[in-house]
View 1 (spheres, rainbow, N blue to C red):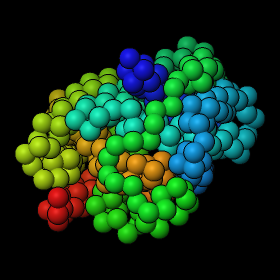
View 2 (cartoon, one colour):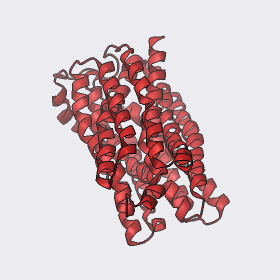
View 3 (cartoon, one colour):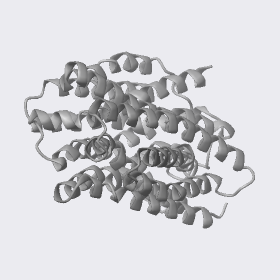
Length: 399
């Protein structure tokens, strides 16, 4: 079926998306040892630079997608751009060249990140949308984990430059696969708003959409937490917990794969199950799971016994990933069909501007001033805030 084929291709691209994004996290200590990067703040800025470009380019691609442009070519261009930028990171000769190359990855990912969720929402009926998003977003932890594991193993065997090449080259084949996808009709979901065909005009309306705005606000705090933790976890395990470098990336990746798969699927299926019976089921699932994760994140960073911090980390990530499908279901379901690309684009801009743009850099700055063990304590504060905002949004929902 065309919808199933599209979901498969888009999920594979999402996996590569996060592999390319997080391969640099596996290379943090090697980049610092090479002399190319000299501080934790500069290391955090590699992720921040990428996300700044990503969030700034997203509204443009959202407007192009909602303005009637064929979406598969936009996807293909995006995948090709970020893959080339990742591969070029292998040839840099200075920190600033590396920063520019990583930032350029954001242009390509903006094209894909805004278009793919809207295409899935248009291709899938509402009754299956939560499960479709669960499959699509399960690629996030798997791709992130592969970034850790592939990056760490290739770095150990052949150096950090080879790791960037291995991460970037496969995107060419997936760009070709995107070109061969059909473009589903823009149908389903909330009723179309007047003037929805004016793509840029959708952004002010979205800001006045209370369910959408509250969902994105909580998502920003969640992204601050998850982005900061994802970037710094391998370095934290090596420096603070004494885990050897290669093992630190494998532990981080293994936990991410297991909890990401289980948490994302469980959250998506639970929300689909509760939606006919519970008002704002998606937000309740997200909010309660995220609140429950907050004390576990604290324990993961403060406990010194290996079994204790491992168990806390696994449980925390399992609960955090439960919100991935439900939150994105709310984002595309709370808006008119003709505004879905804009809704995803504005969400991307907002969650990164207030989320993982500042968090890797802020944690790095706090680490430079104190220790990394102190810097990562910003994460559970953001987790608690995200859960509280989503619970408030669920409690105040009218339908």
